Image 1 (cartoon, helix red, strand yellow):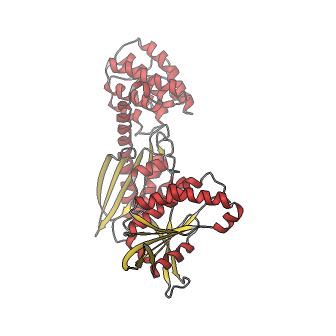
Image 2 (tube, helix red, strand yellow; image 1 turned 30 degrees about the vertical axis):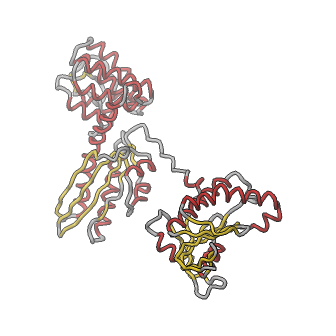
Image 3 (spheres, helix red, strand yellow; image 1 turned 120 degrees about the vertical axis):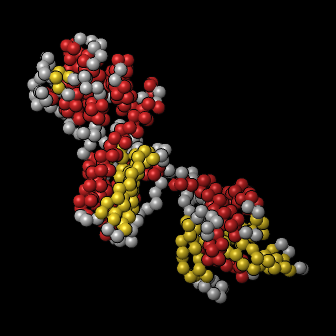
Length: 467
């Protein structure tokens, strides 16, 4: 008999509750075990360059030249068994327990002996059914090479092993659980944004309070814009202190845009950076840097919060417009059709104005409770009658009045604010839009009104909007 010694990774496996299973159904258990070994365990050992040393009735012993191969094989065996057991009643399923250890072994007549083999067998006994238990030596070699987590079980006194062995449980997800990817939340039917906590890049903990307070001010200010869907502070602040993937944040919170930033202090100077990111693509929509003297911290906080809010709103409006323009006309939702209408209306030509009317009407057909679409339609009809004279002014008033009134109704706005009647002194375009925008200076319709030619004036009478 020839004996040699070598370093090896030992893989020991047995069936949990084997005696009970054999007592309940000896032939069935034996056949199922043979099938599992033949179809799952043995092929995986060969695939990972292992050698089956022997079968032990209710399990087996194998060796590998590499710890990484042994652990990877164990993980894939248990994953395969979980798949096979998914539809089998718990009282009849076969679950393996696996122990892995590395050490010096004696090879004799293709069998292996030694302390390392005994340790692997004892670790197997510590494993849960369907689980894997490894020694500290195995964990040290596998860490960083395999995407696995190891749970420390502490020093273990193993039977017939002279010294305690530190053991680790391999934390595994069942395949059925791993397959349950979080379902992305549906996007709202208007621009949606999450404002993440700004990172404190200074050693001064006081800046943490400053950054958090400023973010809260930005969230509050953006929430006042009724055409924005803003994620609440508690949801956004769940990401505080975490390195996050913006795309993942967008999926988890159901938003299209994410605002992030940082705060850095140097002496009496404060630098705040902010970036608006499209969560679907990861592309930057807007970014800015603000440098301020830290004379009055609250004044600076208010100033930066206001500046960021004022900058973000039109940046989002512009990004939404570009997104809508990339969609085929037949695939538009109500919001995108409305955005396309704004784009054509802004061109201020007779042809574009007519196209804008069609898109606003399309938005209304898709969502009859979308107030801004009615306001856009009213605006386009008035511009057609006043600026381009595509119809008689009185006809323009008559056709725009129902749209303006309906916009007030679905938006729960004062009806007299948008009622259009007979000829009266000229009134600015932005005044007509007041009931639709509720005085929000950053509303896209209000911004557009300021950019239209000065000759596009509407005729109103009565109510607080009379000139």
